[in-house]
Length: 345
Image (tube, rainbow, N blue to C red; front, top):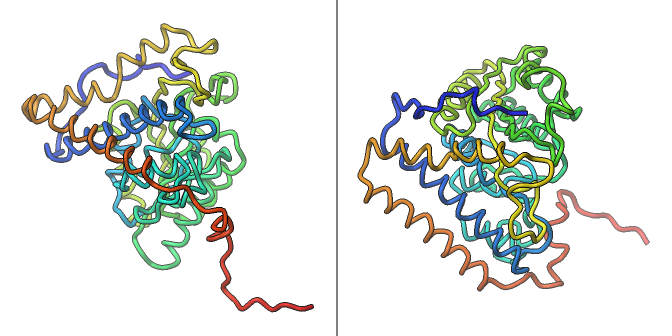
């Protein structure tokens, strides 16, 4: 189980980071938090169908990683990945529309909460299949290598995925072929309700990378600046053709594994209330606001906060006003006809 006490309680190291970047980190984390909170409310009202998995509490590791890459770099995620396209700069209204199953969504309402994809920002897709982000990201990294570009691919996955064969296979292949892939373990300490201490041997996930010759770094996932430093170094290494890196970002989700209509799913039977409160004292938004207070006025910070809320409010209005897909459109975009189809009767 993750221990927040292993990381310093002081402010993140901001050496070499311009105030504008610090402000953008805060803005993107805020948009993700407000987006997720709104999605939870819409789900409880029945406006978002099916279960949703919120990343509230994990915003720092998302944004810190995404701001270390370029728009044309690739990214793949998992079932808890609403915030990742936002972290990489995606337009918010189509994302909200997708959660509500609307035709204006990024996947025309066919992906929903667990299957977002936005190619405009290199988001290749997210899936509820545990560990599936790894081979997708490795394939994208191989594509970049074969095409001779300097693009990098990011694989986001949870600590539960490190026990899946695809994780080991993907990490091994990336190591052998020196693929430009950065593996980011969003280590929130639980696979659904099972603590990592009950399912994974060894002290740290980073040790699994060492066995395959992949350098790894353990980082405070509540500290956006620390994650940005780690991700920037890993991305630079990948662009230089030196191969993959694993980032073990120790973080925490404040809500339950998934939202199933509960009004308050913060503390559940499998987590101790004191554990949750200890991690809440290290809320990434609170930590980063303290950083901003040293480089800009409180009025400017409140302006960022108001703008983030307005972005999500506008996206919600857009999604609600968007039409649902037509039944006749159900099979559009499902098949690619690269060659003429020969029919025999």
